[in-house]
Image 1 (tube, rainbow, N blue to C red):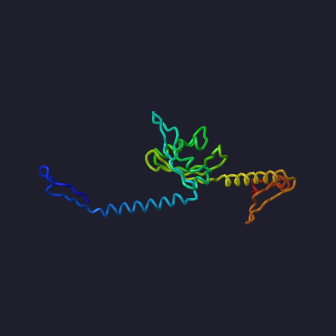
Image 2 (image 1 turned 135 degrees about the vertical axis):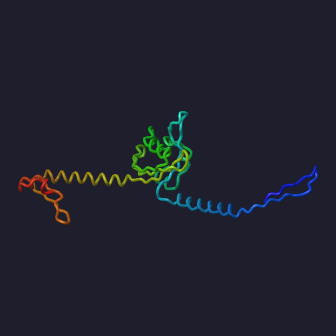
Image 3 (image 1 turned 90 degrees about the horizontal axis):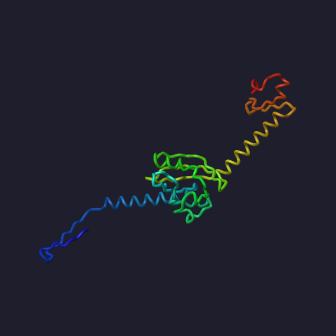
Length: 204
């Protein structure tokens, strides 16, 4: 309700009262608040780290860095960095980077609006991360990420073990044949090939 005096000369003769029905506006505001609470709850309870950034440009319009605007609890746990030590700071400072090697990817996300996902190695932390980046408005982007270091190490151990196993099989003086569960040959060393006269290429 808005009320305004109506004057004749110096005297107030009447009062103009304008009333507007704002039920729709109030309902929309309530829905917006509830929506923000819902998404903020999701943001804070996620197991994945989330960081919001602002892209920074120089006087020539070239991106040179990005500033951290906000982070969730999982970010603190995964990165080992407190929110108060990250928010408002520049990425190269917080992550101790001499070169922002993934800056072009983030610039592309900001300028095209297309999301991107990739693996990244953070040298200063000696950790691997899987990062998904997407635009959250003009000049801004967000990353959702997981620490995949243990997974990468496990893959390397498996790969190294397979290489060692193959080296042992190939160099063994004994004939070695490995079959899978349906009887197909999966490994066949040179000793077997020499003994049988059947080349490995035919046996496998």
